[in-house]
Image (cartoon, rainbow, N blue to C red; front, side, top):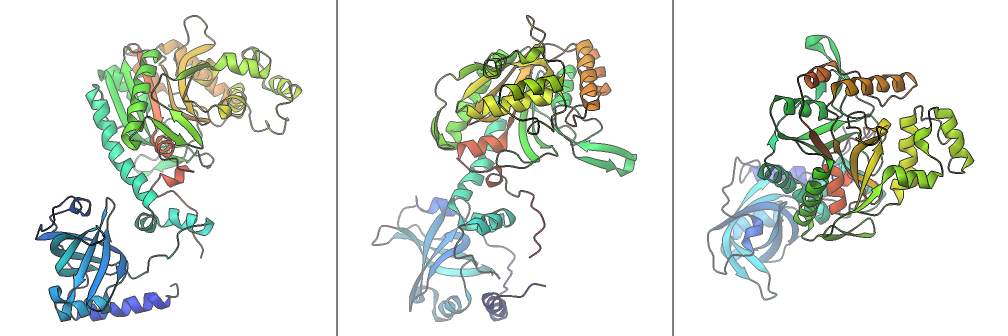
Length: 489
């Protein structure tokens, strides 16, 4: 057991003193106003019952002030010996600390400095903080504490309260927005029997009841398209996904995304819908359609610029990369052009992996946006529909902002013959050493053979969207409880 600080010992001793007067862990307290509502009450409003955590306190002889806070707001409270009585006031001064919870019944008034305040007629002790709040919450050490002890971060950091309150409210906004546009929400399995739905390295697990090796969902895509087969013409899921890959400010192996699919749409319909969705989302989260994020001013009020992936990457490389059939020869050309060394590209075993690396480093990284990136190579999107005029391309788009992908969307591949061939190509890439390929998903192919209408689908990461809107430096700043290595201290 860790050694207690002097303050922690003192606070534990106070529990016994509190027990002499009241239950230090009471059952409940009836409130009739949120803290955020009190500021709008008229002076003289009585029988105001509020509760919260004490985050500021100034104890004086016969009159003390404190501030109660919760996630949505805070309010000043005055406690006067004439109002609560000598015994209660003495109890307050001796036993109540910063971080404790109390409930207050009182009357609203405005101080001479113009601050709306609740004058306590009575108060009740509601919970002791056995550990004091940190005096400072800045610097590298405390950033790690932020992620390990998010509850402390929420108590002490206004920016974090804003982010997570906004994120919570945004979840409801998304569901209402899609429902208002005719989409139905479903749930698909997190534990799956085939690595499918996206090109990514999976997490694996074992299903004891079935004695079956499984993987955690990397995307809900195939199941959602099976819903289309079953008659859900517009379907979506807010899906927790898992990709067993690296971590950096833009990537987290566990993340949340929204995926939606619409029968009879193509990717152009989805571009129009997503532009409006993103514009409305940014306005909901920030109150404006023009924001500053990552040091750049981003304007969502006007149509997004469009960039042709194949044309632009071909221009940058100086050769037609789509004609490359051997990954080693492909690498040699990149080296000749002076972009990267063979060592830089050593881990990329397939044409798809290498092309994606070059795109991300040479093209996507330099985009501020918002930009609609379209016309992707077919080898990168095994579930997307080939373009009618060029089978080397797929009808796909991503919105790129500040060098990062915000969404991924395309006209879906609904031809089961082409889909089987695409899965076979994935197996060939896996044999070359590409560990981010999909399996042969026979269950999905069976559903496709039942017949599919034209479909367009889209996935957008909620974590990255929230990070963008609130100009957070890392995904960990918008995920309540990011996974951390055990703290040995």
